[in-house]
Image 1 (cartoon, helix red, strand yellow):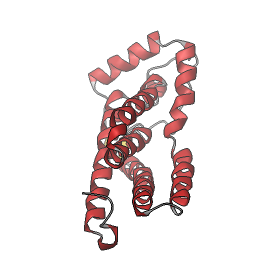
Image 2 (tube, helix red, strand yellow; image 1 turned 45 degrees about the vertical axis):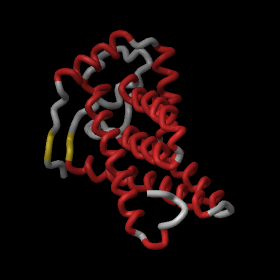
Image 3 (cartoon, one colour; image 1 turned 180 degrees about the horizontal axis):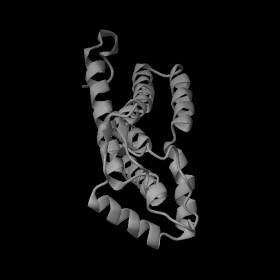
Image 4 (cartoon, helix red, strand yellow; image 1 turned 180 degrees about the vertical axis):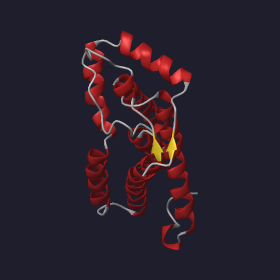
Length: 191
């Protein structure tokens, strides 16, 4: 049962209209492929693989892999909980009428808020920036491109993506704070 209906902002509608009117079929196809890089199923597999590989590494590698896996799991759970309480129609369902020009239908029609893909991106880019500070710019550049694909394929309003990114960063920071308080996790990773 939904408790709150979120109306898209005027800016959201303007961005979605611009995308619907101007995005080329090739950009839409490319965005559909790229958006899978932030899909929870792929991220589960990659983070579990990283975690398993870290078992052969040192304490720093294991702690980093633990943190990445925790971020992926937490950023997968929160969007589902929020979408149980928030109802918002996806832009591809209410902005595109008639010929879709390659724009796919995405997910459940009223599950726009927030973007789970963007939440994954925010959590992982924040985690990578903390674990490997030299990769910060790269992590956020790639993350920004992946998050933007959700707008280009009209799966989410721009504000859904911004909120998702922010929520992902918040998740990672909260997990980081929990890790600091865990006595077995102190040591090689500097806080």
